Image (cartoon, rainbow, N blue to C red; front, side, top):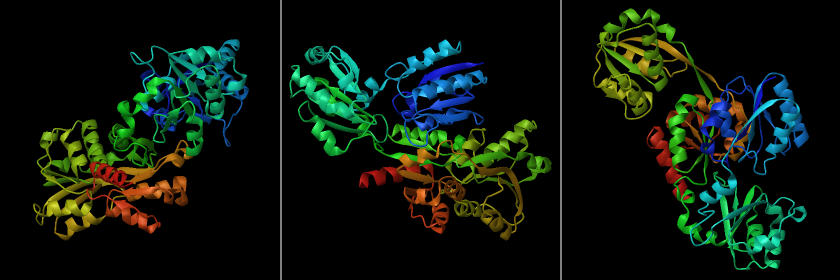
Length: 489
């Protein structure tokens, strides 16, 4: 028998998970999660972790609370480190207490990891402070689910000068507003309803106690929503910050390796996007292939890298065999800024850097320097295009091509995560092929697509997928194109 962690996942924004929540997820061997938790959190799980979806939707493994409780007990008794991911905080209308009591009854050790509750954070992202000096000195949180059956003191709530916050109350919004007005709350009191707060699908409707239910129904809002009632709502336009970010409202799918996605993902998050990360490729190290060339390293005139992975695998192998890079006299060449940065991280400044992230651009840059008879080493992927090596050999250069890494198809934790995507980013032909295999061609065609450059776009066109092609073949070029597209919509 092991241990169960009840983990608060926060309101939806993947970065609102606590550091402790992330650390525990990384060591779990089995995880249960529901629809209110961001699927992006699954990337913190180890590859052997068992995953169980237990939302209240078709296709889920366990629907009732009793079934969920039973599964938690079963997994713990099997010896798993169990993570139960719950939206918001486990103990705020999340039925975490019921799960904890069942574990206690079974004698199973458990720990509760608090989460950021949507009652406060969703308001924050909508520009509404729960309290504000001179306006609201308190806030009160209610569950709005089955409001007619709840023992709410409507008279006390109506007479309160604090902010009233109803979670899960959309279906009961008419009851909530009418009960408050019946008990003396001014019908002109400002109100807001926020749907899917802190995510790319966040939407907000503001009005008064008298008309908010009509406005919400006109907009076609569906759960999950939060209802906010109080004078603080009037501050929402001045205090709105999330909705003003350049990529607000967009869920963007990035398809690179896990290692390459981190920096790009963070840039997108800072710009207000929600990121769905599907690692379509996994890098397999084959740098041992360099062993037949290690004695020749000092003889090369040029060492050329066509990717960050190529640079990383090359220097990783040198370290493993204790090779002193000062023996290398070659000029270093890089396909683009990111690859150049990977080389510079090792204290080496590449003298040749291609303007664009394509082999044609790298060859054009090298051609100004090389001559027939030059010895060139090209450490790269087994799947790389032959263009660069062929062109260098056509010029009479002696080229050693070494496959220092291989690219394999990645895995997808939850195919349903792709449903929420607005724009898909492709950075290589391999990412195109693999995503199509993972989610299906029709699903990919449903989304707006951006290709990093013409080579990637060629693969998309082969599959009948129309894409916007970046003017600058880099992650910065992708971001510029995303902001341009958003501005046109």
